Length: 203
Image (cartoon, rainbow, N blue to C red; front, side):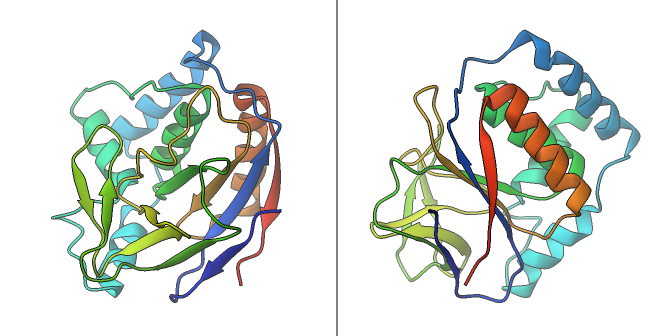
């Protein structure tokens, strides 16, 4: 069972995903991609200010280091396509744009130790990002395992990233969402990640 400890004053919604069958990007997800593009262009997405306020609460300027949800939204507004990575990450990206809530995804078979901790990064802490160079998390919200930070609301790490080999994962919404949105998340994970979810209480 996934354990998540929260050392800072935020209210994440955490899901444990299991029995996953992650595949390459699926053609039948195109309808959801089109829906995401449409709401991004029309502005019918969640409130961008929620994630910005989360960053400001911890002394971060959200216009310098943007929440992943807003960074994706800005890409779509410029006419760039929604990135297609694999069947699970695609769901996370679409929902993150629609809800305007940053999502962290972590392969639990790559996570070290028996828990994830949401905390502020210590001086000098960071990691190699997915397709990026070093990501600095000093003084920033981060998710860490026994080996150190492995994600934050702007960019996750290469070390615990989701691949087509992933069978168990942690899914973290860095802001609370509605029950209907949890249900929709579960439905999309069931169809496109071929997996099950359980909600995890943070301690």
